[in-house]
Length: 243
Length: 57
Picture: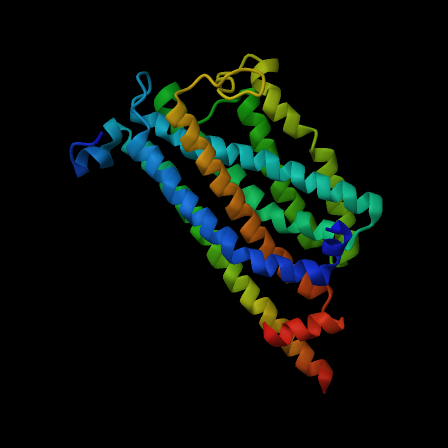
């Protein structure tokens, strides 16, 4: 397989179009499975009762908000280094979904914090750095919206994304580096997970569902962006007639 | 089966507001994103097709 083949907007446009239905169905199916595990398989927590079930949304949303940002930073670095047109569009297509997951991580965190900590919000390092991530997402989208020239917007956005990427390891390690109210990670690459298997499986199923969802919506968005940028080319004119 | 009745399921051991507030807003967010995306894509394609016809004249 030739990877460069898919870096051409025309090929990628068609490939993404074929994948979208499969990704959407996969996301829907896994969400149904994940919800079933969340509410009917995973047992009640002996300390937190039923409130802990928020974890099945909270943790996958927080993972996605950080991972999407890193993927955007990766594509921006590729774009700046090799001047590949498609790379910046990938970052643009991912940002709104990343912002959504970032907001949901904060929202579900507040709804979990209130019954467990007695406060919707505390100014600890984990919560503050996650809020900064939301501001970064919003700032990046505002910057794109403010710059009319698409190529200048691409590069300016890429710079902001790359500078802001320093915040992601800060979020991830904040629970280790500082004494936070937020608990440490239950899942870690270095040691066995400190939670029941059914809870772990539920979280992973929800996380994979979130991934498939993210790729599906990002593909829809990137196809629109490709058509807009390439609209003077022959293939895009043809694709527009069929659309 | 963990839940003895529907009411017990909805009350979530007294944490219903927090649990359903989390799952509900997430569902709302996803539905809103998909709806906005579909609407946005349709209007984009329409706009590009209009420009195409206009430029063809």
